[in-house]
Length: 146
Image (cartoon, rainbow, N blue to C red; front, top):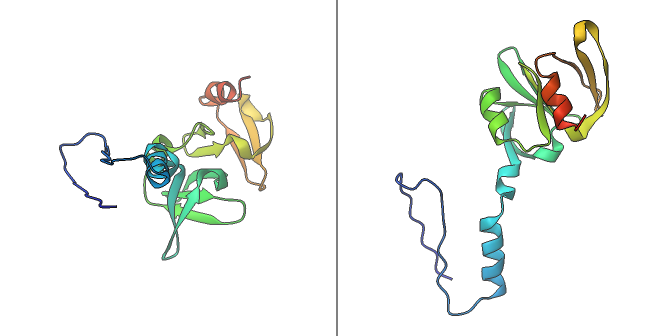
């Protein structure tokens, strides 16, 4: 199959045109891949000089520490260069901000309990803990349908 790629700054959203005389399995697969948003379900992170691609489902928490955004998986901690608000825009609906500096994966929560001064305490399945601030508590409850 012949493939042509055209890069233009005038295009607001990428699109593909496929010209064929018959619909084959390969074309059907290509259409499925192009139409899916699976490519957006990955997060590029760094560990030392290595770069890794994490699936959103592997991410437990993102937290700003020492002016760096750290990405926590079950056992490994990574760094990401983007600011937290930019990363937040790319995440799936499984993620919710719980404080100015922290975003958690709702699917990785082990327990939530009351804490001091109207805040809530959260513990993830990998042992990470944090507080849900009062400001973000309504959004957190809404994400959990509470």
